[in-house]
Image 1 (tube, rainbow, N blue to C red):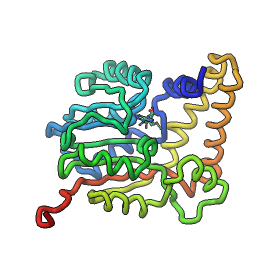
Image 2 (cartoon, rainbow, N blue to C red):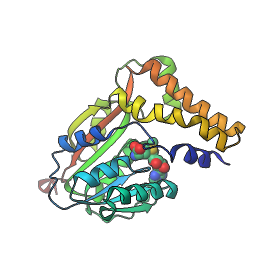
Image 3 (tube, rainbow, N blue to C red):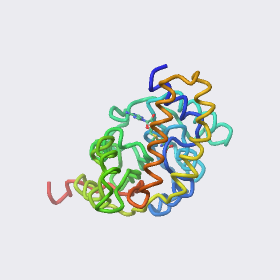
Amino acid sequence: MDDLKLLVDLHMHGRRQGPGGDAETEQALNLAAVDRNSPLKAADIGCGTGASTLVLARLLNARITAVDFLQDFLDVLRENAESMGVADKISTLACSMDNLPFADEELDIIWSEGSIYNIGFEKGVSDWRRYLKVGGLLVASEITWLTDSPPPELRKHWDKDYPEIDMASAKIRVLEKHGYTPIGYFVLPEHCWLDEYYRPMQARFEDFLNRNGRSEESRAVVAAEQREIELYEAYKAHISYGVYIARKLECPAPWEI
Ligand SMILES: C[S@@+](CC[C@H](N)C(=O)[O-])C[C@H]1O[C@@H](n2cnc3c(N)ncnc32)[C@H](O)[C@@H]1O
């Protein structure tokens, strides 16, 4: 089995494929002051098996397109949406986030938890802007330094994995540079990493290894995840996901044209 298939096999049985929490999804909605009654059109980009999509569907009067490039994850999302009675609010779309089919100014909300890094925060923020109505909301969580002097071991790991990692001030500057006004920011607390993501994943390691004949490749997948968990546990004061909430501005402003 190739590495991607192994990663899908490990992660599709999890509620989340990255750090987050239902309460934190709702916290972002509250900070964004989204009107829960008005009919909205939203996209959840890099939705995985849909932890955030299902919260949005439960809380909003919205039509939500749940986008991921892995059909296996979308199939799980669809089943969960049906059992929660919110399937009529969600359409799934297997598609890459750098080639989205939305029309200009089609969406009221773009949501993306733990996923925008796949094309890079700045590219996502800038490319996706055109799909939002003026005044529409972008809510994206992004790996973020909490201190300006992260320990060298941690910096080395993340600089290799994701060189765009930076502090919140730099991410907010990116939003401002690309025609958004930031309206909220908070840091995902530790339980979003440990209780919601890492501990459930660790509990699946044995079954995952057994399903895959304890192959060298499957053991390498577990070792890499375990290494990331140990780094987080050792250095969690320095790193988390920041949740960035921003509103699309009219740009250029009418008086600049
Ligand atoms: C860290 S997971 C986060 C999933 C989910 N939002 C959550 O918080 O549980 C990243 C997700 O992005 C998806 N992904 C990665 N690259 C992608 C791409 N180019 N286009 C669409 N989805 C992508 C992965 O399949 C995965 O579901």
